[in-house]
Amino acid sequence: MKRIYSLMFALTLCTVALNAQYFSEDFEAGLPAGWEVAGNMDLHADAASFSSQYFTVPEHTQFVGSNDDALGAGMDGGGTMTTGVIDLTAVPNGTVIVLSMESFFINGDYQGADETAKVFVSTDMGTTWVEAWNIEDATQWGRIGTVFTDYAGLEIMLRFEYVDGDEWNYGWAFDDLLIAEVPEREAAWAYWNEESYFSGGFEGGKGVVGGVVMNNGTEPITSIDLTYSDGTNSTTETITGLNIGYNESATIQASEEFTLAAGTTTFSVSIGNLNGMGDDENPANDVGDDISITTITPHPDRGVLVEEATGTWCPWCTRGTVYVEGLTKRYPERFVGIAVHNGDPMTVTEYDDGIGALIGGYPSSVVERGDDTDPSALEAPFVTAVQQAPPAQLNVGATEDNGALSVSVSATFLQDVPAGYKLAAILIENGVTGTGSGYNQANAYAGGAFGPMGGYELLGGTIPAAEFVYNHVGRALIGGWNGDANSITSAMVTGEQAVYTFPAYNVGADINLDNTYLIGVLLNASNKPVNAIEIPIAEALANGELTSTKDVFNHNAVNVFPNPFAETATINVSLESSAEVTVEVMNSVGQIVSRVDYGTLTGNQNLTLDGTKLNSGVYFVHVRIGDELATKRVTIAK
View 1 (cartoon, helix red, strand yellow):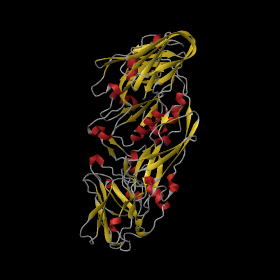
View 2 (cartoon, rainbow, N blue to C red):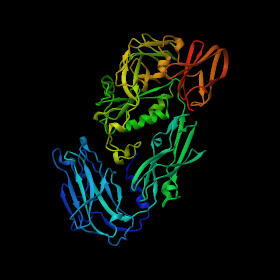
View 3 (cartoon, rainbow, N blue to C red):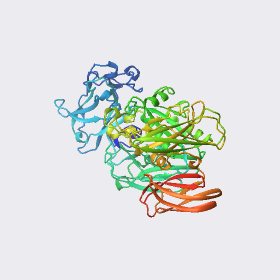
View 4 (spheres, helix red, strand yellow):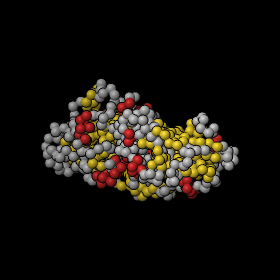
């Protein structure tokens, strides 16, 4: 993704040597003689008196601006500021110069009305005007700029124009105009991607080194080296296929994921060799800050239900998307995240009502239906919960017949519990898209005005439905918000198992069952989730209907490594006593592709999983150990 993004330009302009400055104006002495404002555009002494409810401009020195929001609906907030003659005749022809300014423009386009901020140039004393710059978005008083080389050696006039799109919109404010030379080859590392948002993870958790690169030079960036280290191994790879123009930014990332080792890993990152020509003009800003990640060990039977209240209409909810997606990757299989939608086509009324009673606004999230928590603060309560022993070990199975989905959940109790515990099942879907306007995602982070947010700062204020994919979407509460009271009908003691099959749920035509996951939930007598498990629908169908203790999902007895693998893997089976062992391998549609009966085994055994004749893809390894069934999901990648 690539957009004009000016925060880093604001931070680095002062560190890059300017060869010459040819014009500047900061408005501290007022509007210069011969300059004119028209319409709603005017000089303003302070941001507080200029701001309004929805167009709140951070404090700044004296500036020029137009606030359309303050006028209310039905009013024209457009306006212009026209300069006097700016003499650039002393600039040698062909000199690379840039027009830059401090700007606050969120480009909100309220209700689809296109508000614009543009700069026009006249070379004939105002007789004719040519559009020279269409400002897409900016930061909170971030310095933005555009190449102005065509006007070297000329006398020019500038016109700054705001148009509100004939609707009630936001506005534009600008200050500190400057025309100066800038470097030709100058890149800067702006900031890390969302990997920097999280401090922990599981051993074996995945991530990708990456971040945002800013072009502060006039030479377009077509390639750049990304160098990163985990403290032991250092890697340099050349990122090609770029086209980053002056004052533009782009995300870059390593081609392969990293895998977290146990303990603390510190990652360093830098860029260099711009366009294959060595160092740029300021290597000092090519080095990023280090980030450190410390792994934790979860309880082997624990999953934590995290529900995020969101909606396509909610401009701040992209924050929830970033944090739920990021935590899902850092804490795989244990962070059981669900996006509960409100006021859009993905809304499930019962689910929306349930979470609505727990939150105060959007975005919000709850860990096991506890305190209302901002999505950016989810990691700490999750880490605490995932290390706690759950009351029971869970498993999920399912059968499907012409769209009728029957889900069963089992709970094998690891401690005594009183009466009142219940089971619930939730269907979620990844990869959800839509074509109507209701699938357009509002985005408050457009332009970087509120800092980085997982790349959303590089996108527009409204992300079209065609460009947005929704994951972890809550599709159905199977058994209700509080679970099914018939699922566990008495107190349970350690070692007892409850298995319950919910009434069949008819999967709607708008749900792609292949992209769904089933979540089994155990709720206590106070209707608080105390454990959860999430498995792909293919795995649940492979498990079938859970009916007895033979269908216990044993996390501890079996481990498969490496995973993914290409040819063969090892199945490590830990047997507390002698037992008959059978290994079945099923593909993603539930077909048995191999079966080996090992007879009676005892102790710690390493069995070979032969994938040489299998195609790349996802498989489920069922290891039957006497009356127990252990299921592991593996990936063959050739």
